[in-house]
Structures are given as C-alpha cells and as structure tokens.
Length: 182
Image (cartoon, rainbow, N blue to C red; front, top):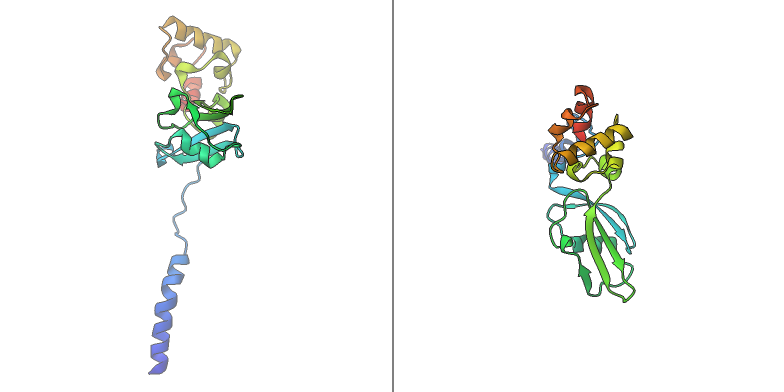
C-alpha cells in the first residue's frame, strides 16, 4: 500500500512538470518582422546618451521615458522639451537628447530615416518622402523618384499610396511591390 501511495504522489508531482515542458505540435510561422499591432513601438534614441539605438517600448510612451532607458551622459537637469516631444511616441520616432553649451539639455523628436524604417518594417510616410527616399525603394530609380515627387507637387503636395499607380513608369507589378512599404 505504501508503494502505491508513493507512486501516486510521484505521478502527481512529476506529470504537471512534464506536461508543461512539452512543446506544442503547432509550429508558428516565422515572420521577418513582428506585427506592429502588438502594443509596442520601435523608437530610435540618439544624442548625448550612454546607450543610443533602437528601443522597443510600450505604445503611448513619452520621450522622457526613453531617455531614462538610454541613460543620459549628464545628470538630468531641467531640459528644454521641443513641443513635438510632449506627445506619445509612435513607431518610427527618433528621439534626440543634446547637451547645450549652457548645460541645459534639448530634447527633440523627429522621424527615423527611410532606410531605418524599411529595415524595421515600419510603414513609410509617403507625404514627407524626398526624391532620395523614393529612390531607396526597390525598382525605383532617380528618374522615377523625381516623377513621383513632381506628381505629388502637381496634385497639391498630397500623395496617397493609391496615387502611385497613376505615376508614369509604375505598372501594376511595381505598384504591388512598393505599396507594401506604406
């Protein structure tokens, strides 16, 4: 009887551990980029900090929180906040902390460059891209980039992704390829 109790106790102790350590037979598909809807955003931190780089932070994070993560080179004294730094960061934001000659710190928020956004899988902002930015897209050369910017200027300075199909030199196949970046 004692052996039966010992076997039952051992089974109750080891079975949950064995079951938790088993992997699922369903293997998730591997993706190049994580979904942006995960409630996290990718932010670039640069300037006078110990650890510049790309940080993945929760959505609605303010620039001041990213600065603390990157550890400023100088102690955080009163710093001047650019009005753009007061709102929550979005994926593709570029936070920069610069020490001014008077000892104050200037905090600015801008956008990552197009190549950085492309590598991270962050959608590009078509209305603010330059000729050089369009030239970085696959299948777009300098001449076609110039035509895209001219098309945008001729149509009130606003360009939607669907409008790219109207630009001379962008066929269905090329449009299908480049629209994935926006």
